[in-house]
Length: 590
Ligand code: AGP
Image (tube, rainbow, N blue to C red):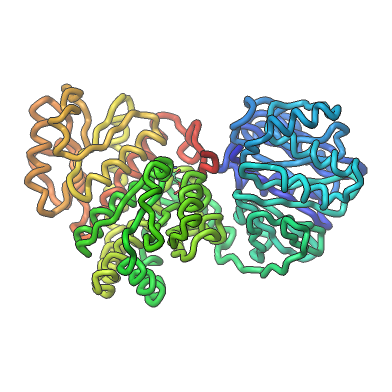
């Protein structure tokens, strides 16, 4: 599954700390939740439903003990039921495990365990872990050795925490291709999928690498490799403070993160010049540049195609990460792969990077989460520095990706200063786009569109990728079907869908394609379509216009009104903007 896991061991009662921590990971998956602590023995409470609802039903605070683990689930194996919620245990309920990821060989492992007499109580892949640990302990292994042996046999991707009634003074953690970070406190330690869960307690962290096992007590953290050899790991300081990861008074993370774009673009502009120039040289020297990404990050890569073509006259290749296996034979050792992913945990992207690494290809990551799997797998990485993005929808990280791509393209063309100035110019203009007047206009627009079933977006050139990203925003947060397309494509089919009143958002920057996109708009208008123009100046053909400043790097600004429209449409339609149905923040399953 793709979930959130947390662990606490220290001198305080674990359950309140675990509950507060797991709530901060609810964005990772939220169809069921559970917790286990060790008092005189292991106790478990768990259930299907959102964290607050389950807590109201079963009161996690009733769990005593200073050692515990917790889990919030996004189901992949086994339905959303109380028994499939984590933690999962061994036969006797003396070992509890919470797990994020997918055990690809769980069926054969489960058969083997059943043959040995183990009794299973869930449909999950995870449960094999607790029974394997039990099996190894029964054969004389220590708790840590049992986790090590178990980890060696698991295939797929996983990060799990295990506690054992017989060794109640420790939590054992195991990481393989899913995020797991240890928080180092004073007389207390934490483990989690994401640092935001324990940031209020400590910002000192140890990032585990793949195939590492950690033995965590209240005042120590020993890390071992998969052969059992102890390793030295540095303790890093995470720059984010806990407040950044909270809503700071906003109703939802989504609106908070949209508004943060006033600051986040600037942070990209203030990237260290030397690192930007070093990366730009690598791009210029590469024999073929392959961008790979998914979802919103993929739309940033499509923009990169236009940006590099226009600014550096350089062709770059762009692939959906999930489709990359069809093209990986084009990789040569002089290719540069640029993997774009805000979470740095997207399984499709990690898989494409793994293939590239096997072929000796250098990989650059454009990533937002420090210490993420992608960052640790890549040869080079540039952080988006957008701060934690909790809303499932990517907003500020998208514009930060665009900003970083612009800066790299200008630097590749030997025009770093121009690129930096362009970003500073855009950054100043973001607050104009986010003016009270514009926000009110967009709220009114959302109210008028709230019952629509289809919304179309058209644009040309760089604005084409804006329409793709805009369509994704609208549909994933308001559940209204939305389609983005190149203006020139309308007459090749989609025009058949335009009826009286069909809403169409047109992206109309001040550039060479303005005349052509206006004639595409007329194609819609003459069939009764309702035109919402996003442009630097009004046009008679617009039925509704959102005016935003004219800037060179217009895709960074043009998307913001559509992000806002998505947010207010969600509110109008009673959708939860931070937790859209069926989606999760980082898609760690293929
Ligand atoms: C964006 O709003 C979506 N949540 C989704 O498409 C996302 O962009 C995609 O899953 C890729 O995530 P990543 O950037 O963390 O790799």
